Image (cartoon, rainbow, N blue to C red; front, side, top):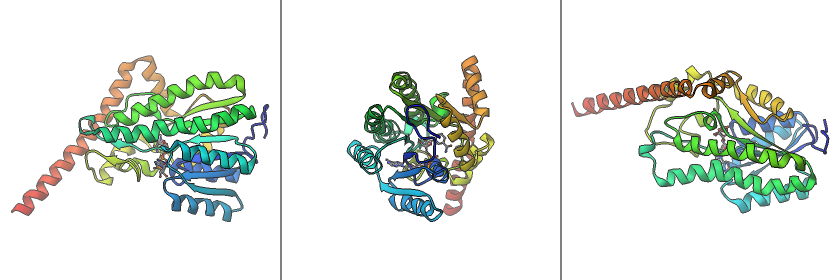
Length: 298
Ligand code: NAD
């Protein structure tokens, strides 16, 4: 379908997806390619991105993979320029790559802050700075910036992550107003909890400030009912096609956001519950370590 202004949704669209080797980015790439888009997957995990692209091609889709660090503006700019030179257009820029450095802020070093900001916020800014001028010149395009529910509500034990995601929401909603008269769409994607590698240790490029076994991390996420990533991608792409401003899936998180705005006290109570559940797992982990150390000493 071609929208007024020339944007292709999604047949024959050209889409660049950062963080396209894994999780949400990968699911977007595979789903868009099935719908006839040509996808470019940029990721630090170059081999995995190539594997995903090869899988798409072997199913008849159109995909390429590129090694990319979204924190490097020159590299992002080069990717966009090469894509536009090769394809003649850019319909979608998914600024999606992200990491988490999870744990209490008192254990956070300045390098941790810088890393999260460089990838989650500067990475989105770099994507916008590279793609937006092209889209303005074309008179069409859609910037999809991955934020999070952590960009709309408090997210204790992940303050640096929440900082960047709140910033991405502010950037996106502000730019959306400016970009609309120029024919460019801008949306903030705010997933709830989606079953992807980032849920464990903050993703392959993230880290935990306080060590916790995967089983314990899983126990913390499961009550929040993680959604299958491919189901998420289908739902999110429908919202993107409708040009929604703030896209929230699974839907029950919209209720959480609404309650938080209605009464921040409810939002704080929910966040406190998440914090308490994390503290419970950390205390159990510390106790297990102590028992092990006592056993070894004995
Ligand atoms: P993921 O770990 O599966 O994917 C993230 C991808 O980003 C990985 O392939 C990783 O290699 C890549 N990446 C990390 N740093 C990069 C860099 N500097 N340059 C290029 N690529 C880089 O996790 P995901 O859940 O698919 O995360 C995608 C986005 O969704 C992130 O922005 C994340 O914050 C956001 N998000 C995820 C959830 C969730 O529950 N999974 C919830 C809210 C928001």
